[in-house]
Length: 237
Image (cartoon, rainbow, N blue to C red; front, side, top):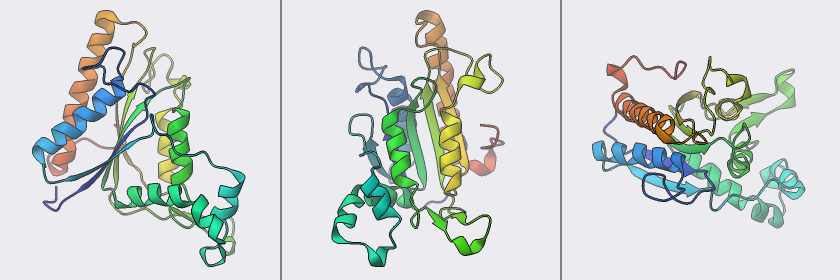
């Protein structure tokens, strides 16, 4: 782990405003993401955290004007286009500046929340995070954030249980994989995961899942702080 100051982008996507360890009906994903960042800063208090709450303040959804502006070459853009893309530019700048992205990502109806998908749609940007050139032939696209060493931690919560790989309903989980696909498209492929399950069951079943998820979060912090001393791999995460 480098001693240089790192930039952490901490994103929460839950519609629930509180944390389940401090607030009645609070969010498990906010609980996990806060735990990760707090433990990280205990070890590296000088690192910078940029916080983004898309659960409470979602980005604007992509519109026809947005698409027109984004696919217009910068030199040919009209003034209104810069205004339409201003929020997207800010979100892309945050992502580009980040070394580590920590996301509280609940499952809503088998996939990521719409407010987080709006973030994805704003940061997957032609000319900013992926390139496009028809002269390249059959594969005109390429990732622009590859080989930058960015790492992502997805911290989830699910009402049922068995969504992890090999689980009884893993085929219904389109949450983490959809995010992996979108981020991989722009060149960010080192992704780790932890999740709380059984929220709808409550009781000891939920309590055990929370404990396991928190242990996984702690292990991820330790592993990512000292990658040379661990066998943890993103592919198996």
